[in-house]
Amino acid sequence: METNLAATTAARKERLIALRRKKEEGETSGTFALKQRNYDPETRNLRKRDAEDGNQDTVEKAVEGLAEMIIKEDEEKRAEELDLFNIQPKRPNWDLKRDMDNRMSKLDRKTNEAIATIFRQRLQSLRKNQDPSAQVDLVASINAAEHERDEQTREESEEE
Image 1 (cartoon, helix red, strand yellow):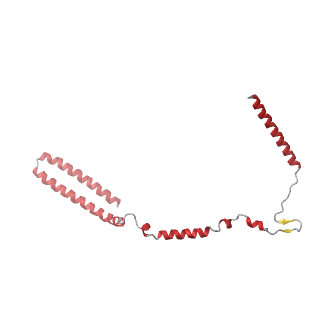
Image 2: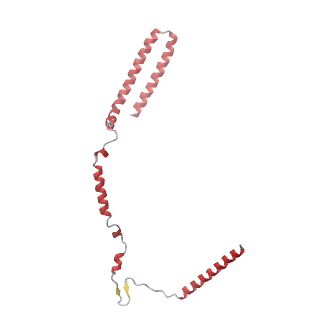
Image 3: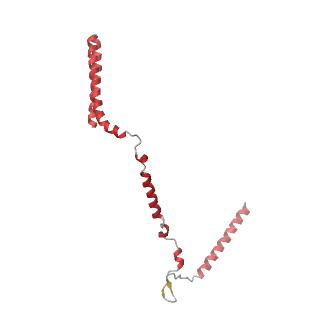
């Protein structure tokens, strides 16, 4: 293991020395070459664009066919939108249910009141036919039912 470690350290030292030499050589050759892309130093005029500049990627080239593709996709979507099966609702009677809910809420209230009056009438007829101790229980149940019904009607009227 020690030999392996010694070999790796020696290799690392050699690489570091080679890197230092390379840096020193690079600094001594410090002449900087200026690239004249748009200026010609011999004629002292601006250079015109070369033909090879036309091969560069530009935004215009990237977006060239995009407008036509968008127009085609839009036309296809509009053709699909005219399909009547896509327009119709899932249930054909949803609008009827919506319109009838308001009317039915009033009828439900009146139906509940009619049921309560029928219930009272039957209890009164039973009360006449039964003994007085049973009447107290029936009256208490009637009062409780009426109280619950009144609370429900108040809550419904507050919601509207």
